[in-house]
Length: 279
Ligand SMILES: NC(=O)C1=CN([C@@H]2O[C@H](COP(=O)(O)OP(=O)(O)OC[C@H]3O[C@@H](n4cnc5c(N)ncnc54)[C@H](O)[C@@H]3O)[C@@H](O)[C@H]2O)C=CC1
Ligand SMILES: O=C(O)[C@@H]1CCC=N1
Image (cartoon, rainbow, N blue to C red; front, side):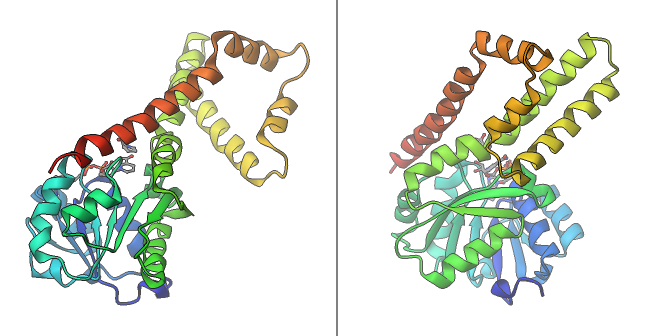
């Protein structure tokens, strides 16, 4: 087993959708046995797929196997979290609870779970599907070191992790990297449209746009220079890039992006308020 931290750890998921599937796939690639993973979902088709693909055990509702797990990952939508916590409450013991839901605050989840102390709130993203995810992680003060290491090992199975000391900053993390893949896809879609309008084929536009994102991201990751310097190196005086960047500046694109990401972060906080208030 490559990930010794998780050796023998029994992990249960409530919610077996997109993000849970990415995490389970990453865990299995890390050598976690499917027999150590249990998934609860109300959708039997999702469960059948997970069972076939990863050899995990499954159930349509909370059962003894979930109760005997060491870690429970809550991977349902924020709107379902309160109801799931209520179902879980009578069955909960000393398990480490990891939530991946946007907005839902650790303290609210803890209260819904009878003041359960071991709550870790995380924000992964969909590149987890190809082991290139990045996850922000916050742990409540009573989560011990061994539990923090387990949480880190689970999320590291699908990419890298960034620990966040102040839970309020998980909403900005959600705005940057949780929702972030959608902004990148949005930009790629715009580049595809421009390519097509200027006469390139759909295939050519797609290939050019995606390879440019991959190459530029890798360059930014590997270069010792700041991203602004990398941008300046592309931007010849009086050249083509200068024409595009000047146009973007005139349209206020950078400022609009900052405003948009703040809206995402605000929405995360609102979700927390909306569901945290419910008693
Ligand atoms: N999709 C994304 O890019 C990201 C999503 N998240 C968070 O991950 C969580 C899950 O999102 P996705 O996987 O995208 O959603 P999804 O809709 O693919 O998965 C949710 C799953 O929960 C199941 N479910 C609903 N009610 C249930 C219940 N009472 N008991 C058991 N299972 C139940 C559904 O059948 C579904 O399979 C959300 O809270 C979201 O905020 C976090 C980071 C990124
Ligand atoms: O849009 C959402 O609410 C979720 C959280 C981050 C990405 N998707």
